[in-house]
Length: 378
Image 1: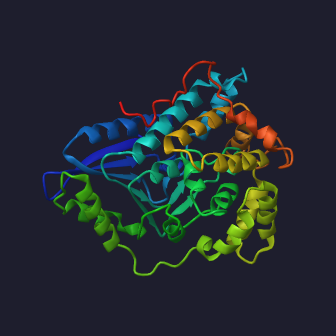
Image 2 (image 1 turned 90 degrees about the horizontal axis):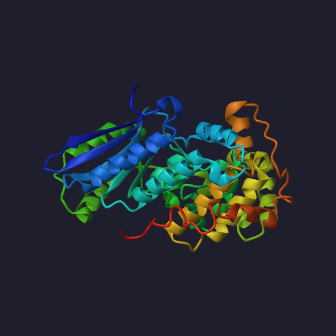
Image 3 (image 1 turned 30 degrees about the vertical axis):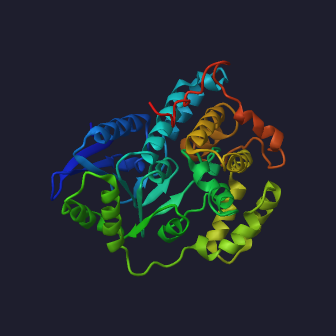
């Protein structure tokens, strides 16, 4: 059986080496499983302690995707198996989100450069892996999105931290519509650092192997930036988010979700098909997810990254027993009827009081948060 995560160490022009990690489930667009999270953590731990590794390259197998998301099938089965209705009784989701969020935080705080080759589809759990990398590369085939509203979840894996720090209105729009971004928009809004051609990976790797890497991170970061900048295409056309920024900020800024919803719905008749699609996704998505995502973006704006992961962990576990996650996965991936019965069915029913249930810690009273140690010095 082929391993779902491959790792290799490449020689360079000097004594230092390059570690390459490949997500190896191309048949599922490199969707992230619990096993893969464990494997990634193990390899990153080993290479962080190995003085001969100068930098890490993280990529996906195949041309279609870096990583299209997390293990929704596994989550669905675990929700079916959890008959108690208590979020803490779902052992699989407890472990999955614990391991995944720790992995994402590890990438954010890694002591060596990580180059993430974010070509093709980068969604959900893939965004979580890419977001923390020190050198995030997108290409002409990149399709970057957090489309959780369509499955009854919210932009997790640190997604609320990322979106809450975008210009007013932009984060709300992306969270509520799942709109897909290309390379230009990702770079313009700080969601990526470099743009390269999708067919340039092998040439880039050859460039990296031809370098005599230093043992100090600062020098290696600078060298890596120069290599990536040298391979940037001469012309990069602006993306739809850049083109429509003023309108989106006008419609989606502020703290009134009803007004924002009306603004997004008004885009259904816009001349631009990208805006039309955004409005369609929002109107078909979970009203509960809309309220939850909007509320989270307001709450986490001034939190540290570690605190955001702790907040998201609570909400993710609660999504496993209430809200629309189970129904959303059923409609999209299991029965594939694409006709979810959202509950609540309207945004008016998913009000401020309703959403508070998702912020109650589900573990036994008096126990510490499972991610309490995140961000602390050992």
